[in-house]
Image 1 (cartoon, helix red, strand yellow):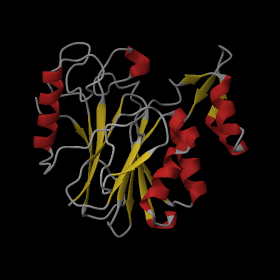
Image 2: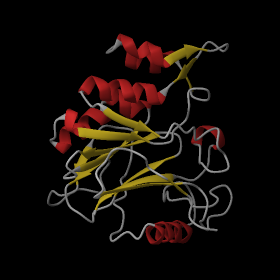
Image 3: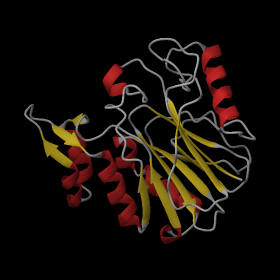
Length: 246
């Protein structure tokens, strides 16, 4: 079976390469079946290595993806800086150098890809609700050092509002700083809230001045055949959003 990939459709210039992996086409067994790219979820190391090799081959990548130690924060690594502490926790990265492949692992959280209109700089962020509330998207744009109006963004697959149930503390974390964020939450019969992660991301990007925002509009929880979902399955694999410059 070939490696499963979702096409990234956005307004980035042609020298920007981007891809999103689905769960088909790998060698991992249950419950990580089959193209698990996460090395931290209990899967066999040799299986993850083979899955990553297959993905790189399918995309004809010229370099190994720069995998981050994601912790649901807002730290951004500049992958062009000398002595980049890639082994330290970070949830976003930027580069201006062709050949470096940025990578974000997800299984419900939202991967957000950025590119400048001139194709000179790219950024990738891991945006679950904690990262969004902490400002990971704004921090990534700041690290790119380009006016937001000259950036485009792509919101990748994530858990949809029908399946993302959260407590009052999550809603409060967003509404406290932006009353308009209340539109991303609706009550449910259990006294909790259904959260629209994509709407929260769009609100924050728009508020920052970014005008070109594309979205995969794909729910990871609802698509068990093609997507991993931590909220749905607990122990499971990880997909990846990859971004690079030609």
